[in-house]
Length: 137
Image (cartoon, rainbow, N blue to C red; front, side, top):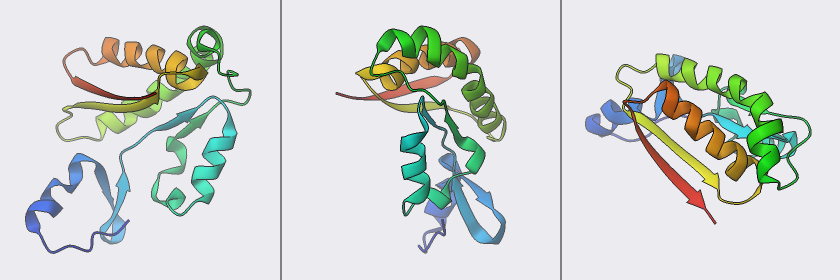
């Protein structure tokens, strides 16, 4: 996206959530994850889909069928290392990584099952960083 404001302070703080790309464009420092590709296709096709780095969309093929155990132990466990690679790459691109903000659901396979697995793995790898979770019921 493009910053249209005039505040130098806001522009200076832009790097908290965005990476600066060429031409004064800003790319969200976000990793989007799902165990089935349908939702990712909808995001990419939507009005904000072009804002995100294409390789920051990480998705499986089969889904977890709203099953926590499949998201945590099987389908999610197969995908979590790929997600962590993208998280690591984004973290390495930060000047001063403060922490992580995770938005996930409390039900189902991806948000609850894989979400708890991912939070646990991020905590293992970045034990000294803050983590804020925004859980959707």
